[in-house]
Every structure is written in C-alpha cells, then in structure tokens.
Image (tube, rainbow, N blue to C red):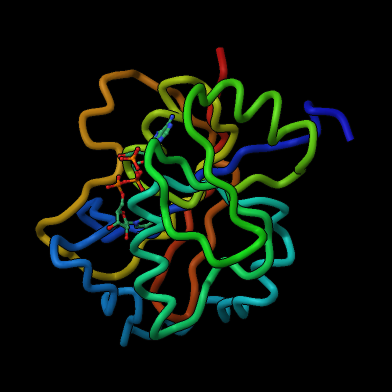
Amino acid sequence: MTASESKVTIHMVSSLDGFIAKKDGDVSWFETADHYEHGLKEESAEEFLKIIDCFVMGSRTYEHALELSRTFGWVYGDIPSFVLSHRILPIDRKNIEIYSGDLNNLVNNRLKPNYKNIWLVGGAILAKDFLLLKLADDIRLSILPVILGDGTQFLDHIGQHQVLHLKDVTAYKSGMVELWYEVKKE
Ligand SMILES: NC(=O)c1ccc[n+]([C@@H]2O[C@H](COP(=O)([O-])OP(=O)(O)OC[C@H]3O[C@@H](n4cnc5c(N)ncnc54)[C@H](OP(=O)(O)O)[C@@H]3O)[C@@H](O)[C@H]2O)c1
C-alpha cells in the first residue's frame, strides 16, 4: 500500500446546533426516539468497524471513552488506536498507543504508510488541528435530530476558510443524517 492510497476521515456525531458533547458528558442524546420512514437501517457496530484500519483520538476523547467503557464496553474494538497526549494515561489494551508531538509526522510517517482507512474520532480540538494542518481528507458528520443548546462545539471559530466537496448524504431511520465531505486541498 502506498501512502497516497491511505485516507484520513474525521468522523463526528453532532446535534443540529453543532455540539458534539454536553458539558456534563451525558451521551444519552446519541440514542434518538425519532423515526424517519424513508431512512436506511443503521449498520451494526461490528459492520461499521470492518471498514476502519486505525483510530486516532485526543486524550479527552480517550478518557471519556474509557469512562463509558465501564458501562458499555470499549467501542473501538481491537483496531489499532493512537491517542494524542502529553501525559501518561492509563492503558489496558494492547492495541492502544500514546503519541505526543508533531501531527504531520504522525500522519505521514506513522499512519499513512501502514493503514488505509484512518478515522479521527474526536474530539473538537484534534479535529480542528487536523483541518488547519490539511491532514484530513474527508469529513463524515452525523447530525442527530436534537438541539443541545450548549456544550463542546465542532469547528468552533476554526479561523480558516475551507472549501468542501459533498460526496454523499444518507438519512437513517433514527432521524440521523450523515453528510460526507471531501476536504479540498487547493
Ligand atoms: N460527538 C462525537 O462524535 C464526539 C467524538 C469524540 C469526542 N467527543 C467528545 O468531545 C470531548 C473531547 O473533545 P475535546 O475537543 O475537548 O478534546 P480532544 O480533541 O479529545 O483532546 C484534546 C487533547 O489531546 C491532546 N493532544 C492534542 N494534540 C496533541 C499533540 N499533537 N500531541 C500530544 N497531545 C495532543 C491534548 O491533551 P493532553 O493534555 O493529554 O496533552 C489535548 O488537550 C469529550 O466530551 C468527548 O466525549 C464527541
């Protein structure tokens, strides 16, 4: 595999008003009671994980996922996962590696030569850095049928104009709409 065949996708779940997390960390809004008759049935978590070769996440996303794993299990499976942190974090799985430092080096020297479908799964800080450094190829934004009103915002004041190409739109039975964009590089 050459590095050019490899792709970095930012995947984020958001409310209609652009929030990816509530201030109190509550994730119950991920479950919707909505029903959209013409929508597709969501893939199972197992099917979804099959298309991903590697995960990348910021330390705050990792710490929240670790906390949730005590109730719901570890959602990222056995797929190699790189956690960005300047700190020493608790790691209890062999497939998790901590990385600290230059993001260009991580993507172009560590990830792209080794993994084809690289998914950056948050949070807002890391996603913004990837976009500012032009390290993201695609964005897949899943918008849930809810307005949260407050919390952590996706792409809050990113401070850079970025043109996108809409690749696909999918509506699901749960009322979730996925917008799939390519990040234009010129
Ligand atoms: N709705 C969704 O789809 C979704 C997805 C993911 C996360 N979330 C939510 O978003 C929140 C977390 O997002 P966030 O924006 O606050 O934080 P984040 O992006 O998850 O993590 C940011 C942290 O990563 C570390 N980091 C970033 N770049 C680094 C680098 N180059 N080298 C070393 N460390 C680096 C730093 O932590 P250190 O202090 O450890 O160095 C930084 O504070 C959580 O509430 C989570 O649940 C929601």
